Length: 361
Ligand SMILES: Nc1ncnc2c1ncn2[C@@H]1O[C@H](COP(=O)(O)OP(=O)(O)O)[C@@H](O)[C@H]1O
Ligand SMILES: CCCC(=O)OP(=O)(O)O
Image 1 (cartoon, helix red, strand yellow):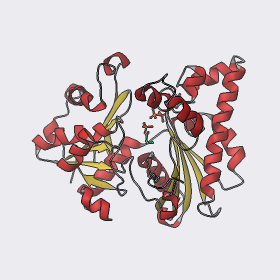
Image 2 (cartoon, helix red, strand yellow):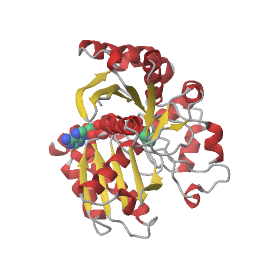
Image 3 (cartoon, helix red, strand yellow):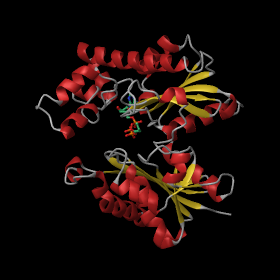
């Protein structure tokens, strides 16, 4: 039986899509959105029509009949904490993502666009391994302020997929291993997977800075800035997400550019590059304590894992903990499609999204 799946991954500046016939990729395309176009929209949700039309245009240009689709799967957005795996997109999820997202984020459009394409075709839309996959243990939830519990927001889709792939490549079961996965992209999150469960993470505001995010910053200074009267709420949020990290020091989010600055003798660029490796290493070290040092491997993934200088700098600091495996790039479109395929073939079940059920789980 052939299943044709459309996968949609909306990012801050692009919407990546792919079409798979079972496990064979027949189309992959990154649709870039101009910053000047995106600036017109007040909220991420307002970009829905524009991004959906762009997706349909690409399908049309590539002669892919939407009637030939068996399912549509989108990157799961910032929902309240959910389980790993697949969820069927329903009205309750759409209402949450459109009207009360936990945080405004481009991935919130993944479920919405998928649903709106799938619904008129009479087929299902899914999300898979949402950003909000939360398998934290009770002890990991405490933040130090009552009523301000930690929740898990991470690159769960790529991190789990790489952890599963690492296990498979080594003829092991994901559920038998303890792995630490550092996803190094525009944002950085690090997660620890204990016997198949992502039991703790260092999120993009808890650990290393990244090309466009500040990571963990001194709380007291941050509060002072918030109340200084110099910045609006939106500007403060932008300071930590969008204009924080490498871009705040060096005015670029492109690590390749940073590396060419270093090659040209720029000492500031060298310091920032080294500091990021140092901070990622600290997050990995922190998570090694969660499994009492019993770490089978450390996986470094994401676009930045292409950088030998970066991965070598991290490796030299953490390889005393365990073997370090470099798995560059991200596999998000494939992970979404294969996840949906497992649901269509009956290998996996898709959960029904219900906040009442999640609250009582
Ligand atoms: N070959 C490379 N060497 C160094 N950095 C790279 C390389 N390829 C991509 N990057 C960097 O990876 C980052 C983007 O990673 P990616 O996982 O694509 O992020 P996102 O999906 O969050 O936009 C950018 O800073 C980019 O410069
Ligand atoms: C921290 C949640 C995941 C996330 O931020 O994804 P992007 O880096 O793709 O924005």
